Image 1: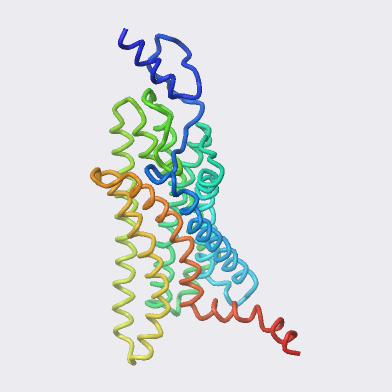
Image 2: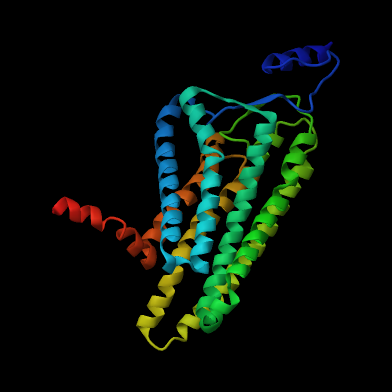
Length: 336
């Protein structure tokens, strides 16, 4: 009798009926309900304003980077090819989550189909891994350019850059592939309400009424293996770069050479610090408020795509000059 009452209560929470009165779980719910930011529902409209502004800046900034690099033949070099890969990745990463977030905040459109949820989850994790891999590729480019400049053009040919880009994409696609399969295999019997703004892996599997240690361990393994490899490679590259910089004969040469790497270092810190902070707090920060976890999750997905074009636009002389050259003719006509 107790089991039957429990099933009735759970069924009342779900927007679909149970296939059998004796069934106490469903494997694939037809829809999930995204709650948004739990505890801050009354402020959703106000919170949407900075999120919308950051999303617009992300789109404008990254599209501008792509346009400038395509337009300027002098920027058709490995460094800027990797920058274009980063811009495309950032566009996909923020677009896979923010439109749905805004629809929740503005139109209370909380439902997301089970397959759509898995697709969103896969895209978020795939392109997060791809972005990390692009930072490794950019670090390698800076290492060759500074430590072995005479061979830079022969080592990083267009063919090599394309192969590196393909390897980065394949690694992301393969490493994230188990996530949707693991989510699909669990039975769900508690609720289909996800206390989040998007289908984040841990937020979804925590709804399962099963031993989810496989999902938890794989997520932790994927995070640590990726971050360990990528951060270690980047650290080794910049160790060699700094050694080469300090061996330059003059202070001006050292500052100029370090300036070419400073934008990349800023972008790396902007990506890895929020990513690591969110990943570990979502698993071990059980005493932190739920809305804090959700806000941090959105920050690490939205802030890097927004600030990356700004950092490269401000700190990279070639991009800055190319951007300025887009406007002088209009200004001349107005003055005349």
